[in-house]
Amino acid sequence: MKILKPINGIGKKNGVYLTQEFGNVWIATQDMVLGGISIKKGDNVYKVAFKMDGHNGEDYAAPHREPAIVVHDGFADFYGDGSKGYGYNARLTWTDISGYTYECVYGHLDKHTEIPREVKAGEVIGWIDNSGFSTDTHLHFGIRKLLNGTVVDYDNGYFGYFNPQPFYKKETSQVVYKELNKPVLYFPVGSVLIPFATDYTSYLEDFADAVVVELPASEFKKFKVANKLKVKL
Image (tube, helix red, strand yellow):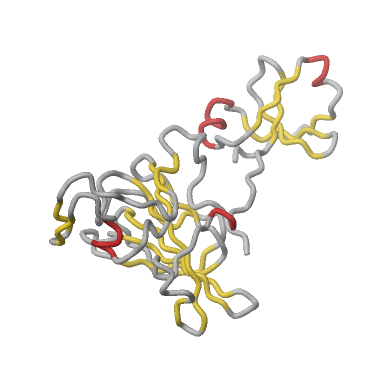
């Protein structure tokens, strides 16, 4: 089982980065009260307040209303009142050929009006916000699996959630070409370059993972260039 990452441009796009890994422990540096629960200095906050060994997912900092991404083809449903726990959140589920159902949670989203629907990997499932139990705009992403409606390994200290890192697909950067000092971008298909975008700056803003190869005119002429300019992606 392989999945996409739940947000694009991690560590590459301004303001988008991993802030908390799966299993991180939160040790209280002073006596505190959280959700009406008294926690003493030195306590594992997750253990006392949430009955977990540590953080049961990953947190990603992101700008307000940055899109959260569907990590696998499946069915999306939407929950929450915006004030507690994961706040407004989305749940993504799919079942593999072995009969296991995988469930992903996307927490702390902006208020949604979405209806349950079939979704495809790479689509937008929601918009990142600061709803629920959250101190700043971020996405909480968690994944666990079920068999016949029962969470597998529920007593693992994380209510069945597990580290998603080993299951992410490897990121591959799209290579595009442009002639030096010219604005048009080209998508390579063998030895042919197909023009598809005329605004170099906007393209880089939208596709942070792209590798742009700038060729001097002498090298650029070695390629065959398609005549038709395609619609900007």
